Image 1 (cartoon, rainbow, N blue to C red):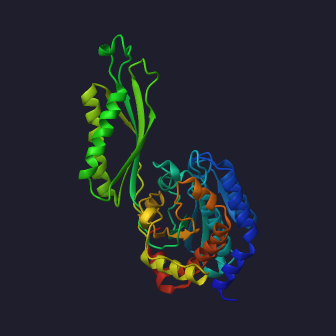
Image 2 (spheres, helix red, strand yellow):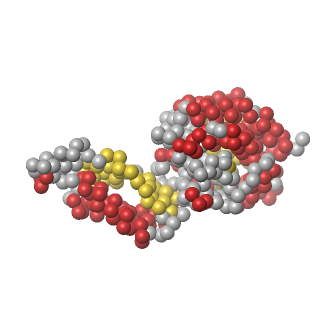
Image 3 (cartoon, rainbow, N blue to C red):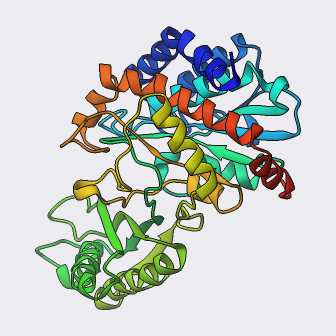
Amino acid sequence: MDALKQVESTVRSREGNLLDLSHRIHAHPELGFEEHDSSRWCAEVLSAEGFDVDTGVGGLDTAFIASRGEGPLHLVFCAEYDALPGIGHACGHNMIAAMSVGAGIGLGALADDLGVRVSVYGTPAEEIGDAGGKIRMLEAGLFEGVHAAMMLHPGPVDAGNVPWNAASMFDVHYHGKEAHAAAAPDLGVNAADALTVAQTAIGLLRQHLDPDALVHGIVTHGGEAPNIVPAHTTARFIVRAPDMARMDRAKERVLDCFRAGATATGATLEIQGGASPYAEVRNDPVLMKLYEEEAVAVGRDLAPSSGFGSGGRGAASTDMGNVSQVIPSIHPLIGIDSSPAVPHQPEFAAHAAGAVADRAVVEGAAALARAAVRMASDEAVRTRLLGREG
């Protein structure tokens, strides 16, 4: 049996364990940096398969690195397992975890024969939008010596080189002054009015932003009571664009809108967070071609390049983008036939534990493992990867 068939056979022989892992994570959604059960379950499955597992890496309680093999080529599968507030695994991270674990097990069985070190990185808190787990692991030096990083994300359809935007998320605080809203409003400084002015300005700004720039946010605190002039209001906003440069330009204009709210009302503006934005994903074209070929080989039907949003747009963001800026990486989609449901809808969460998703978990893991075999055995690809400074 050749290596491609062997790693796929290994993955398929673990179908029960992989689907159990996916379903358990799905049934017990945990928010970013709180994924204690999910990360432990992933680590336990890998440990049982002979992987050396280090937990709590990079100072993150729910991060881990599981490795097998001593070869010079270091290939990494990134596992995500955090959920969304209120709607659980509506981004299908239960599947991401199971696919990366499965791919690691498949490749790990041949690690020494292929001359690779295979690792599964448990990367928490992708959904928090600022300084996510991969960014913190990068900053801790945990990706040093890695030659390629891979992961799969569920979507309505299979697609390879989809766009992933740069994004910055930050919190806005306005500080004003309380007063009786009826008897002495002139003595107050209305922090809620400041936020209203800012939101109105952002609405007007949208016409003049780059057509691919996106701004969205929520009010997280609007005041204490209607008869008290609000002295403190807060909001959380995200600015996105196809790359970091355009995102930075759009963000500065959005921040001007928040400054306008402070100027108009006399409130004090404070911005928190946003210092560790998510970069756009830079898919390595050679590695992506290998993945696409192996995805077809295991039975997937890839759509033309598209995103997982409405109309095939790809406006989502991920901290895998930061990894891809410094390490050859791929971040394709695997379809779960969810249309019209898309990620971050409750309906998508239901699809992420269905029969079609279960098939995707096994085939996705097999495709990733087969693509990794190609990376290790193709002399030109291997030489290029090893020639990088890890």
